[in-house]
Image (cartoon, rainbow, N blue to C red; front, top):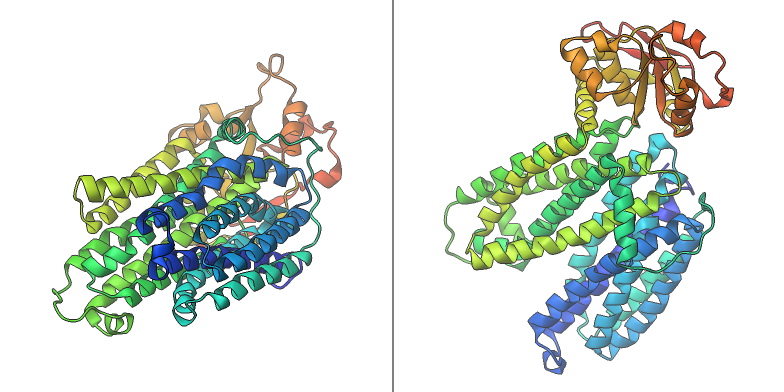
Length: 567
């Protein structure tokens, strides 16, 4: 998958875009901070904060419009147009950098943020069209890895470039060259035509965004995923923003130690994303999100404890090299790295889940809503940090502890807003830790087509396994689940059942119609008794839409190797 034309040109394009965004932004901030300060009409502090705000503002203003456009145009064509726009902007940036026109560079930063806001929805919505469903988690993992490495490289290399060439010649040439290479890579992306009917897209930044949010909220599972992803960006933005002061005040380090913290955090997220791809076994596994959330909480709580256990240091500030040579710092290093790893495990399944669960032709709009929420949460992160650290005189360690405690509230919210998350977690444990379920033909099981499973009466355990394997909503057709007790009754209440009985047949809507609706939506319908197969034998369903046979050998045997064969 990685080196195929379906993925690799897109991967290079998005990595270079993230790299150029961060490189240009950090070059601008460093040039303003360390050179030609007297030429600014405003203070340096105001300029820096204004730059941060102007880069985020377009995500609030233009994400809704960007989502509509991405759902109604060839996605590869849209990417190429956006990369051409980046070349134009970076050509202007070359002139601004060489002439030290800082206000023009500030305007260009806003325009780069606008270009990124339009790229965001198509960046994620192209994946479910370009990749097979069993490749989706792995594709998202590589995207997250590439994005955070690009952020890291852009952030770190900007300081080296400005220090080596204060006049900006190298900076100007580099940002333009990266934009050109990004466009060349985008030309290689295969066409991905829109599947939505053509409609004129109206630009309405506020009303359009609110309308799109209300549409996404009609799908509670997707809305819950959006909120939880935004929490990740809230938490991540808080860590990244506080790293400079955390390094100086709590770790007694210099600027190179800040770079080490960024490296640990970013590489951790990238490695965690790849681990998530391995643990998913070709499926969207929300159970891994719980593992990531637990890691964020445990290692986030241990980090302040590890720092407070350090011996006071009154000598020369630690550099990155001297810091890692001290054995007492290993616990801090491990905690920071594992916070990043946990973040990767946490976020990748959620992005893949949105891509799989979004209505056909509406994926980019769901991603646009996610980007709006991300921007709001990141602004909230800055506000909360200023209030707690400033007005309430909290320490950075107290702030980090609060983040870890709030993870528990996020878990409670996720369970409340999306009960299916509980089933996904339990099913993952049963299939991969308790029974070690092995699935043959997984690529056919999750290829997006409708599935009708005809089987005998299913136990609670089998239903949990099926629910987790599907990666999407399932409907169980039954006439006796209302008589179940205990755990089976609880499970039945939270699963989707179409109840069949002679008493209800006269008042219930057409079962054929219900099943056809579910199958057309790409959902699974499990008929629990073979007799029902006879009852629905006159269903007008095309054979190519169905996969009918499901067999499971020794599915209830303790710790046996379960073989699930899809015919």
